[in-house]
Amino acid sequence: MPGQNSDKGLVIIAGAGQGLGRHLLARFQAGGYTAVGLVRTMPEQPSPGVTLNHLDLSDADRTAASLADLISRHGVPKVVVHNAAELVISPFADLSGAQMEGVWRNTVLSAFNLAQGTVTAMARAGSGVFLVSGATASIRGGARFAAFASAKFALRGMTQSLAREYQPQGVHVAHVLLDGIIDTPRSRDLHDLDPARMMKPDEIADAYWGLAHQPRSTWTHELDLRPVTEGF
Image 1 (cartoon, one colour):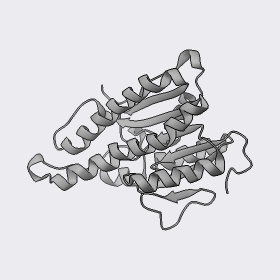
Image 2: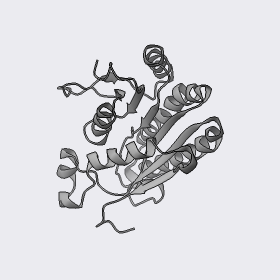
Image 3: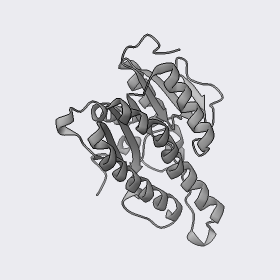
């Protein structure tokens, strides 16, 4: 298993698909951790040297069992990143209740289940880092983004609550607001935007690494990242 000789401990990246998730896995693995990715859909051709576990984080029982197994084999995680979400862009009149619920389950409920299986264990250990990927939609709803924005707003609120509850127990909880388009093959297909104006996933991963290694006297609880060309 990649990283099995590491002495830095376990890192879990939930939502480790192509793009930011895969770069987060690579960054923490390169830094000496045992990095395990959780994905709802396994890729047809997994990248060499990457450890991925198939898991639907909206399934509470399966998530609890999978996380308990990882902890039993590797110990309490040092860092957990929630990077899972589901994006639906639709006129409100065409939006179905099933779509609304699906976005909420895969964005908010997934984070709830992930936190229940890891943050309490970190609190008992007296240390740990739980990072959550947000978006522009976490603070500003846009036309045709009712499902995504409502879920991202809820995710940000839950993250704030976790930070206030678990900071006194030594757990660093932080929300990262990603204000821009992340440069991936899919985003290049979807958006008519010069890649030079997109967020580079390896550079975002470096920011997460820094956030995860802050000294206790200077913890950040919300970090916003955007390209220099992005208006805000």
